[in-house]
Image 1 (cartoon, helix red, strand yellow):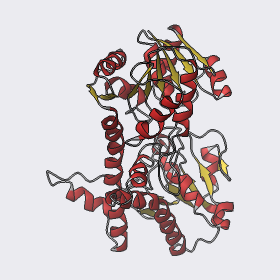
Image 2 (cartoon, one colour):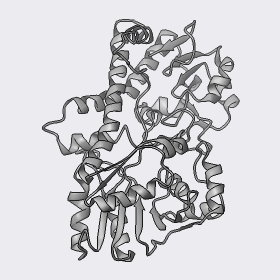
Image 3 (cartoon, helix red, strand yellow):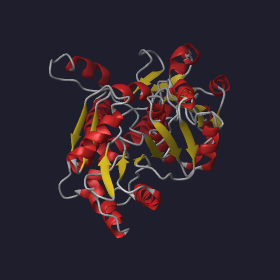
Image 4 (cartoon, helix red, strand yellow):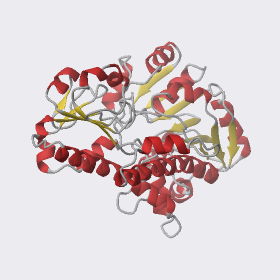
Length: 408
């Protein structure tokens, strides 16, 4: 069996490698020439636990990388799905473009599997009309499947193998065929259903998580207003057998939890209320952190903003993924003086992407009196004694309470 994986980013690349190491012949396609060149040189394009080893094993199998779409029977489409900032609706342009390119080269009867996270009805609204416009008959000339990814950066390889999967298909026979394909590496349950149900389940999984995070973040604001320790409040409340409140943090990032709920807000503006409120809480958390920092600076009579540093740029601890990161959201909210003077560091971001970014930890902390912890990277936990003399705003609750230690 041979497949063409379209899109070699955070989801597409590990998926292609996993197929390749389990007996499936794979061609990976991406429009980014530099990315394809890097892969063909035998190098991965982002850091992920176990990815380099998986990559080496895949190269020993049958995998190739190119910018060209291939003439095949099965395609796995794993391209970004952003949302429109104004109306919050999904922007399907990358999915539509990928499917259009597939239609230009595919064999008759080809199966197009869309892994990209899409809002309920996206395939009906955008993909089916495109296919019909091109003169193809769905169910005969091409078959459609939605098999949304369900993995998280930092634990991708394990979750690819062990998480359950959902396969949405028009025809049961096609769904079962794709189920067998994913069973080549997936040990979890694989459920076959219809396409719209598959679209919905993926979006609401991330929406559920977003809402739970929002509850914790809103609690942090209530407790701050009343001068209470939100972590102690949550610790005690969680002793109830049916209560499991998450920990608050500096915001929500990544391309899933911070994006997918907006699809529902955009598509159902007259119905969706709680989901929208949760999104607004989490999007507002970086501003809450910034206001907390400004209060701490005022309380400690600190006026030299060049002595203030922000630790962490990625959206999640111990990964190099900066998509929709709370720190980047916070930086957008800085005033001119803060933007010019605040210093930034992240051990996982090895190229300068923002102003005043340091690439050396010791050089970074040597300039500071105040540090805002936005990521609980292991690198910081291992060097926490190096910053004990600083005033610290710890948004991740990794440092014990003490003099000069502030929490959300």
